[in-house]
Every structure is written in C-alpha cells, then in structure tokens.
Image (cartoon, rainbow, N blue to C red; front, top):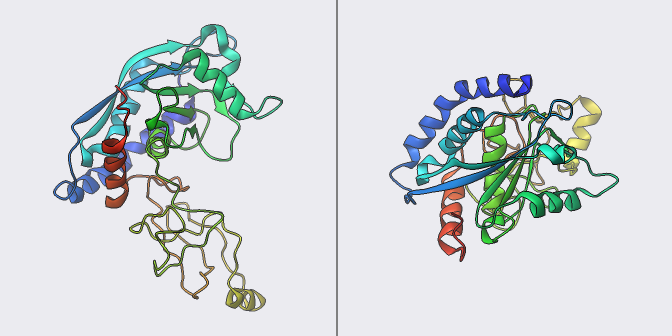
Length: 282
C-alpha cells in the first residue's frame, strides 16, 4: 500500500500540472527534441511486517507519467520496464546513515539490485537525509550508477523527487550553493550557484548576512523564512550588492516544495549531457 502522505501529495500534483503544461508551451519552439524514452528499472521496498510492496505498479506508472511531464519540452520520457521487489532484503528499505554510512548502504543496494545500462529508481520507505530522496550526480555517464533513491515518507511528492534527482543524474546542480554567493545581478552566474545563468540567484542554505542587514536587524525584525505556505518568496536578507533575492521557487532543481518546471538553459544542459554521454542508458 502507498503511504497516505504520498497519496495527498500526488493529488496536489494535479493542481500543479497545469503549470507544467504552460511551461511546455513556452519551450516547445526553441528546444531540440530528443525523442528519447528511458525504460526504468524500479526496485521496491516492502513493509517489514507483511512483506507487501510499499507502492504498486500502477502507482509507479502514474508517478513516471507525471515525471515525464517535466521533460516533455525536450521530448524525453520515462516508463516502467521492469520491477524488483526487495522481499528478502526488507531492512534496506530504510536508508540510515548510522552505524553504516549512507554511501555504503547505497552501494549495497546497487550491487544487489541495480541493472546495468538502466536508470534504476529505488522506492524506499524512508531515507535519513535533510532533503527528499537521493541520487548519483552525473550517473547517466556510468554503466552501474544511474540510480535515483525515492523517500516515500517525504512530504514532497515522488514525481517531484524523481524529476529533481534525474536532473542531478544528468549533471544539473541545485539552484543554490552553500559554498558560493551568487549575485542577484547575475554577474557571477557562470561560476557560482548552479552555474546556469537563467536561474536567478538563490540564497537557500547560505549563512552570509549583508552588513546593511545587520544594521537593519537592530531596528526591525527581518524575515529569514524563504517561502510562505503558498510558495511566495518572502526572505528579506540581501546579497553583497544590497539587492534583494528573487529565485524561482517553482524550479525543479530548487530546494523548495513548489517544483513544476525547468528553465530553458537547464533543459539545454540535459540535452547536451545526453548527446555527449558515451553511454546511452536503455
């Protein structure tokens, strides 16, 4: 059975889907079309008591259909090809970082279940990370590690998780970078943040405080939350040039639970990665 939180979030996707369709319309004329469908190998965790799958084949089909909508502007899609149920390895359905490191557990999952030259999507009960899901960065260029790990306990829907981590699989970075400060005016966009210039600077995760904001803090209380409940960006701190941030909170590669579209340059990056990769996953 699918967990109730996933059902509610998947229902929410219906509301967001119209936004995806409008995004498709604005990209269609200016983007190349790959006519590529990826056959997905799904590895499914089971309930520790009943040994029943935690998600059904039909639900995965629906999730992959929703995921494909994000990539429709470049004519790329994803469909379920084969499934593996982890009936005898139910303890691997929960990825913890202790006492065995997360990377070792992911390596064990790969060695036991991942198919070569496939995108493998692991549907797991939960993953002990601060973000929803996990993936192998640039994994599309490898024979064994084109893997995405979905956290079905996460508030964010599985289709959004998969789209985000497929982006990482194709080499896309998050829209934010805790180690660099991208300026709002875009002057350093090629070397900071996600290194893509049509995604505005995103301060998520940064600890930098503008000196002028330190002065403002003495006079007023600044909002340090990033978004409101209805996905409006409300963060009031500024960049080093005293400019206010205005990131795309609906971007698939952002950290915000409002995902509904890639930008044109992000999609072109995926196309280039696909064309340049010596390995074309089946």
